[in-house]
Amino acid sequence: MRRTGTTRRSALTATGAFGLGAVLTGCGSGGGAPRHDSTGADARTVSLRASTALKAAEARSGVSLLARYDQVVAAHPLTEAGLAPMRAAVREHVAALGGRAGTGVPSSPAPAAPAADVRTALRELAAEERRLADVRAAALLKAEPELARLLASIAAAGAAHAYLLTELAKETPA
Image 1 (cartoon, rainbow, N blue to C red):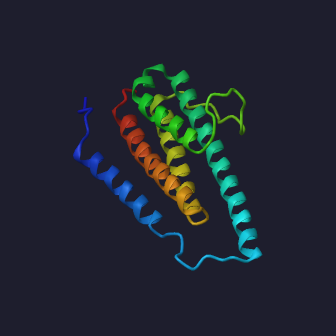
Image 2: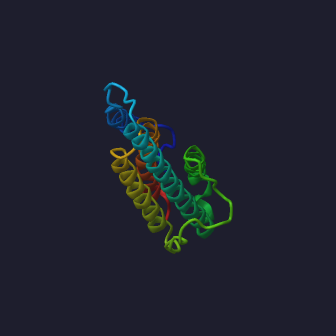
Image 3: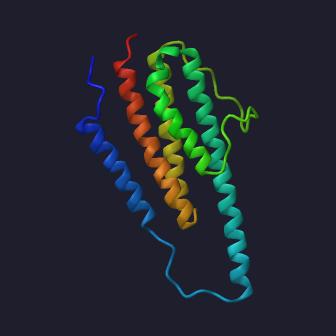
């Protein structure tokens, strides 16, 4: 069995993901002079609506991901200890995005049932984390600076989760 503490590789991966998030969010808010015309107010309203819609969509994606974690734990109870910290982080991400996890109301179609093989189920969960991290990283270009920083942080955490889930799949007995 491998060591379960923080390894140099995982620390470097997390640092790299955090650094990437910092670089991506550094592309700031545009330091131009403020506008005082009616089109500026309209643009801010449109921007606020778009930002709110993006935040809500990302919260729904987070709720769906959390449901996926819950399904894997239900299908493979031995994974609960390994997945608990990541599930907690995903729950906090949903809350930070303004969503409510565990409301019992599905916000999107239920994810497909996890694979019967525990390793495959963990790999599928890692792939979903990776896909969602990529979607959130792409959404940075459309987001307001504050939301972009939040999405970058959540995307970096998702990339780290994908790595950890892949490693957990390798270490889990068949």
